[in-house]
Structures are given as C-alpha cells and as structure tokens.
Length: 139
Image (cartoon, rainbow, N blue to C red):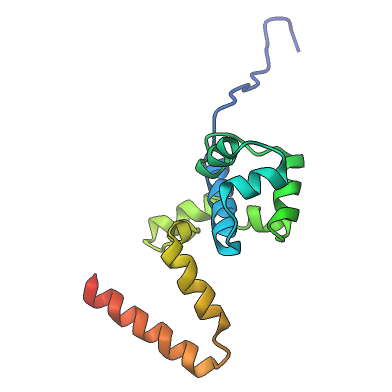
C-alpha cells in the first residue's frame, strides 16, 4: 500500500438497525418476565436510564453486557441475534410483520403468555383462527 492509499475505517458510534432490534428483544423479554426497568438495571449493574437507552437502541449493548442480559432474562445470547437485519428488511418488503415490536405493550405480552399456557393444540388453533378473523374485520 502506498502512502497515498488509505483504509477507511468507520469509527461511527451511532446506532444501527441491529442495535434497535436487540433493544426491542431485551424489552420484550423483560416485559414477558414481568421485570421492571429498575429491577433489570440492578441485576445488570446499570441505571434504569441505561436500560431505557438499550431498549430504544440509542446505545449499543457490549458483548459482556449482552451476556448479563442473557443471564438475567434467562435467554440464550442467540435469541438477540436471530434473523439478520437483511432478512428482516426482505420480509418487511413483502408486508410480513417480523420482529418483536408487537410485544411492546403489556397487553400483547399478557396475550402471548396466556396463549403459551394453553395445552390443547386444537384450542390454540381455534384461537389463532379467531384472532385472524378479528384482524380482518378490524383491518
């Protein structure tokens, strides 16, 4: 490499779509587990404001901190990385809703939790069909 050639290395510390998705997954698991931001902050060893920033994707989660989230929320680290940003963009372009944005409300978390407790497979299927019909009507 000559002196005039240079390697461009991005030192940008801003958030990326992946940071936002990891934050959404942290929030979804926290809500699903019934843990407040303050409680999670104490477990992780940060302030609740930091938890807010992580969940919004405003701050990146380091590898070590992600390990702590994984342990605190009892989820494998791979959960936070399932599906690449490229795959999600492709799916969203096809009008398929992927990701965990729908779990940002406590009502959705309650619904998913209740659904997961239904043991009867036929009853679960009937509930799914009912929900899809309601969605079409409300659409």
